[in-house]
Image 1 (cartoon, rainbow, N blue to C red):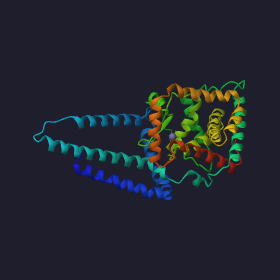
Image 2 (image 1 turned 180 degrees about the horizontal axis):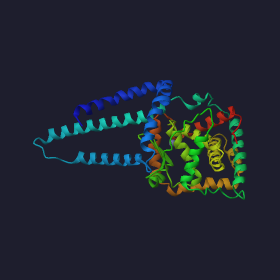
Image 3 (image 1 turned 60 degrees about the vertical axis):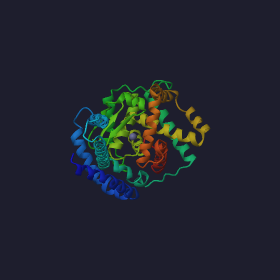
Image 4 (image 1 turned 135 degrees about the horizontal axis):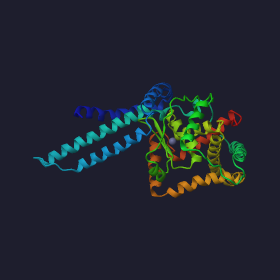
Length: 367
Ligand SMILES: [Zn+2]
């Protein structure tokens, strides 16, 4: 690349940081102009380009990126004989540094243009016009409602309450059910603009299992990838979560809330089971922080078979747990902090605030 282009790109980096700083103060602008206009157009183009390809183009892009960076680093240490070794080396380092900043600047720009600005949109509770405040009593009432619904549904799906629910579907069938749920969703508050099916199995599912990840959206291609090794019972909420990201809800807790609503309100019993137990897990964890004894008493009320579904997921992650997971938690926690989610991975109980308040306004979960 020409040096002038590199210099301009590098110079653009601090300008972008300033722009993001300004946007952070103005979530209304981001919501109006980016999330509801520019992003919708850009993501349509991305889906048009990548949805028909059966494997993840984004994963190939990431692999290429890693290779490019590796070659670049190797090249950095390779010595070339020059007439004046010191000046030559200094010049080379300067060019390399310029290249690195320019490259980062370009990636940073594309990341934000294609998806990342959504991190600065209006918080979902504001768009929905609901509060984030809730008392322990309100949480208790919500959790009891979920437990009752979960137990009833569980009894309909199994012959004995000590059995876990078996998801005897292929991954593609479950994927299809989630697409259908989004298509069917009549939720007027969320108005999920369902467009193109663009969900794929991740090429990196094994390393993802060790890293503790169920899925991710590639912001450069807007493809959603899921870890196909996770238990099938977890697939509906995982895929629904990734589609939530694809639709422009970048924040973890907001994508979780959307996944919960889409699955819990669907007519498919298996999706509903996945969604109810998903919301219940967050509610019980939150209750545990507020009142451990009450939380344990609530867990006692659950059918033993439901606990077996939870256990299956826990055992899956335990089998892959280790140092990689810890490192990834730190890395991802920092990524969230950089991207406007200051509580990092801890920010997950915002989803409980959204669920409790949303269903208080709606009276109850639909089914
Ligand atoms: Zn996510």
